[in-house]
Length: 195
Image (cartoon, rainbow, N blue to C red; front, top):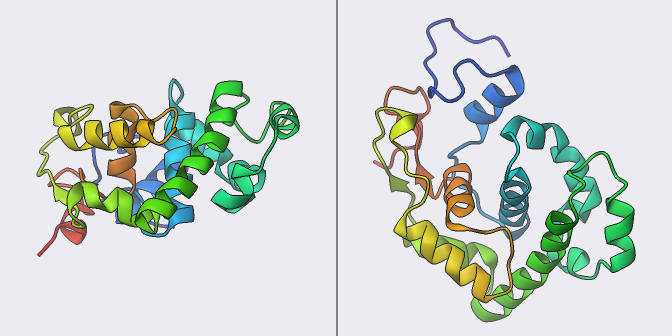
């Protein structure tokens, strides 16, 4: 994709490589709906813990293949044998706790679906169905966690989710468009700001 030289992006991605820039330009901050996509984003944000987002983006297709396209019902049925197999899979982050958390989180998705009808309805209830607008001048002003992400984290943990701390859930909220944290000078900010 050829971009005009004058395109201004958020500071965190301005000097990043093409994969990160494409993710920023097309996905980051765009409101996401659908249980499989939200489950994917929760999984990827948890997998990113302690690693760079670039590493996770490069392994994204590997995650989709390893975890059945993030079909929570299928992932919830994965066994200890599957965990051992995935620990040998270089297409994902080979961390036992993160692999096991994805399976546990799939079971949590099923519990939320029973309780609220969908993961989508549950997650979006934390922002009353409307993306929050932060109006950041610089990405350095973004909080690492908020009351919203702390409440979401706590609610997920109560339902058996793991790798969903408040900071991870704030990153999820940014990525999944529950909050518009594009800098006001970024070309994506206005497109994602509510009217």
